[in-house]
Length: 607
Image (cartoon, rainbow, N blue to C red; front, side, top):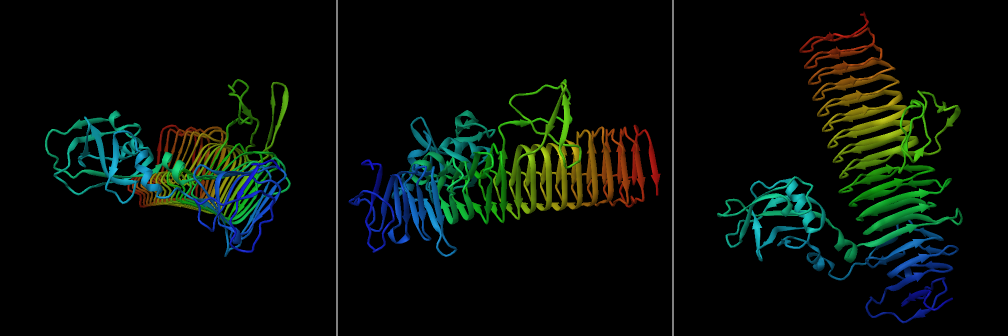
């Protein structure tokens, strides 16, 4: 072994011994007597026991290919800021419910006292409870002064926090009035996208301020956190299937990237990740390297709960929670390539490279085949993602955000509630989408968004309610879409909006759409397909019960009702396709029960 290849500073006060090969040197006086200091390459088979620790990591750790690091229940690793651990070999970290293995930061002493040094030039927070809040002061003409609270906005807070070096603003508040303070600015008028307060419109103060000075609270002083508080995190970069790495009954906290997985995934269960900038990030897994997560808690992180990029295999996530990501999504998927729907693509269409050759059928489980320029193109999906019995709650963006996915996506028995943006946002999916037993409630924008989704889509047994915009929004898609056994109620805009679909068989069955602030059900600009409503009730909506406009697809409505809505019950406008209505009721609406405005080629009513 080369001198310096492994550095272990050991100071053992117990009779426990570590089962590793190393060169032992004297302990540093900078650390507590109970700490062992680790740094460098961990070569061979090494076992760390809690009786030897806690272990302080002074420089980056590397587990090389062919080596294995084993952490016994209760082992604690404390990482200095700007250090981390990379696993090219094998890591076995198996704790127990009572004695978890812990990875966390060991920040510099009195780290928060350094925070103000990381503020932007000419701006500061004063007299707050900590470095993230306080009275906002700015420097003008070599004098520090305050800003009047009058006309202060959320956008001003975001820009001021960005000027200070934070990621975003959290809140603003009035500070106690103080006649001794110099009031420099009457008001700022920021749009919200500026990086500096001086890039905003503002008015200097020429008279005394009748208002109190403004105070603000910010989130995420990044340079300070990375250099003085957070450790770099864990990075799995194994190239081989064997030996496996295992994380079980493990806590990871206070990291930049808590868990970063590429190439080959470890076995992960009963892991808690919190207080980090990014939670879990998975990218570029090799084929046949599936990832399974069970009983995972990811909470109170800044930018990412869990993010998957460039997937070629299967993902299974069960019994897990992704909550309180302050500035990001709870769970997100993003592919670098854009799927092309060859089953509805014409030979005169323009293709954008690189291409992902994935496609879907018009409602059948086997995907599709299509002749292209004399060749027969056979396309199937090779990857899948399952989210089962999961919770996505109180995230700063969406609960679940999916972009450019080709394959089979399932979400079942899960909750997407009280997220700042959408509960579920899926943009760009080709293949098969199954959403079962979902509760999507109280989100800041839309409940469920499906944009450019093509293939077989089934939404069954769901509650989508109390969202600040539409409950469900579906637009620009093709294929087969079924919604059944669902309640869509008390959303702050439309209950369901479906628009700009082509070559779609749309089947809405056993839906209760009620008390939405606008129209209960809107279908707009659908073509070359079929629309069927069976056992659908739309009641007490603040506009129309059901509104059909500019749809060239035939419509069949059976055993359905539109009652006690503030506008028309069923309203057809510029409908190009035929309409057949049987066994329906439309009563107690403030306007007509059934209204038809020009355009219907054929109307059949059987009541």
